[in-house]
Image 1 (cartoon, rainbow, N blue to C red):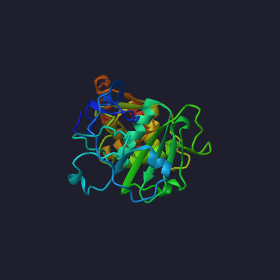
Image 2 (spheres, helix red, strand yellow):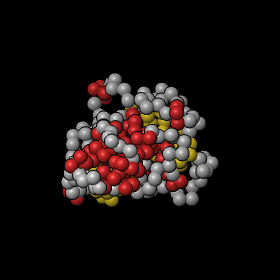
Image 3 (tube, rainbow, N blue to C red):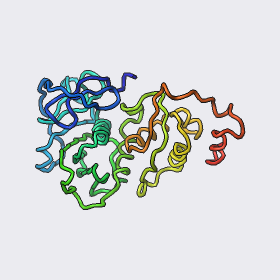
Image 4 (cartoon, rainbow, N blue to C red):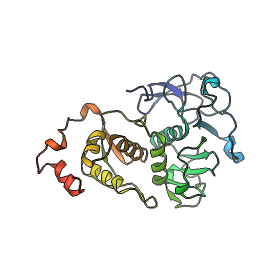
Length: 289
């Protein structure tokens, strides 16, 4: 585990319950504790309007600006909401990184709930994970990659609770693609580990996104074989940094299978493989010189 990854330990329950839940360093577990955290003061008010019903829900504030962090000293959360673990010293992830951690946790728990993303200077984004759908009055080409503030509100609901917008709405894949690429531009997502290998479990829904050709090619490669980030970068002729960002986004979308580093067999460099090896056949198929 690297210093930028989330350390194992007891953290406030991401479902907003008055309890702690054990984070094993990679995912939430079923182990809970009724111990309470030391109360913290409420988050500073946002610079944009929120509906009254959104204020009533628990929320996690993830600011992108570093101003005032030293003065705060500790993470600040509105009453009733628990923060996701992020780094050390109870310091939360910021901006889209904090939102991505919340979204990943909610997707992993599979507990019926609704999510609202309050993005500074923009209308709120409403999400219903039960239907893998979201609604936003703006088009995704208006998605702000570096907002000054993000507030995540999570509301537990029943299986039969009506969605907050008319279905089918928009595919959640498209929003998660945007969030996943913006959240961790210079590092691996905290729920992933260095050395893991990945493969595609389903094709992502990119209907309205027009992804780059290289994104499609790399994703297609993952549909053919299991690869580490370094192997995928080498095979596709792309940089490790851009490949890592792709893996972050696809992982948040829930379209990747993951193999632990201990189970990944070392692979020789593509240049050292024979002319008819799988690596070389894939390179020819995707027209990579």
